[in-house]
Image (cartoon, rainbow over all chains, first blue to last red):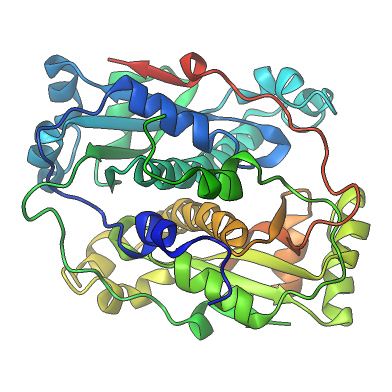
Length: 196
Length: 196
C-alpha cells in the first residue's frame, strides 16, 4: 500500500469513518470547531480564495427555523444532533482577494468583476472547502452527517443575505446508537480513472 | 489541541502540505493513483453519487493537447510535471445511482430526471470529491498543484463528451526545487464561523 499516511489516520478519516444519522448527547464545543477550522483552512483553493462560511446552529429557535426547511427525513435527526453547521458560499469573496492573494492583487478586478463568474468560482471553491471541512470533522474524532436534502431557497432567505448561498447542512457529534446505515458500494478504479 | 488526528498526519495533509509548482522527475505510478482513489472513494457525497472522473494525462501528445488550453502561467509547469490529472464531473451519474444507492433506487428518477438538476448536483458533489482527491494525493506523500486557470470549454471539447465537464487540472509529483510560493494568509475563525 504506497500511502505515506499512517493506517490509523486512513481509518479515522476515510476507511472507518462513516456518515452518522444519530448522535450521543455529548456537546460539540466552539473550541472543537475552531480546531477543525484551524486545520483545514490551509487546504488549497484557486487564488487562495476562501468563500466558505460556516453558520453554527445552536439556539433552539434557530434549530427550529432550520428544520422547517429540511426534508422530512432530515428534520428529527438534525433537531437531535449536538451541533449542526450550515455550509455557505460567499459570492463576494473577491473583496478579500487583494489581502488573501497578495502575489497578484489585480485578480479581484481582472477575473472576478462579474457576479456570475464569482458565483461559479465561489460554488466550486467553497465545495472544495466543504470537502476539507468534512475531513476536518473526522480529524477531530467526530462524525459528520452531511445533507443536501433541504429547500435551498428557503434556507437562503431564512439565514443569509443575497450575497451568500447554502451548499450543505452538516450534523456533527459523536455517533450514537444505530448511527450508521450500511455502507454503499463504490465505483471501481477502472470506472473512474482513465489514461490518455 | 482537541484533534484526534495525530500531528504528523495533520502536517502531511494540511499544515506542512503546500501547492507545488515544480516537481522532481520521479514518476507517479498508476499504483499510486489507485491507492489514492481506494482511500478517498469512501468519503461522503449526496445519495452516494460518485460523479468525479479522473483523466490521467500521460502521453506527450495528450500533454500538448492539454497545455494548449491552459493559461500561460500553467503551461510549462504542467508539461514538466510527472503526472497531470484532469478532474471532471459526470453529469449522467444518475445512471449508476440505483446500484450505488440501493437503499433508495427511486432517487434516480425522483430527484435527478432533469439535466440541470443533475449538473448542479454533479458539480457540487464532484467538487467535494475533488477536495478529497487533493487530500488523498497528500496522503500518498505527493504534492498536488491544482489549477483552474484554463479554457474550460476548450478542455471540454478536447477531452470530453457532452455529458462531462472539467472542474480542475492537478499536477502531481514530488516537489522539486523552488516548488512553493510563500503561503498566503487565511481568514480568521471569526471571519468564517458565526453562531445563531
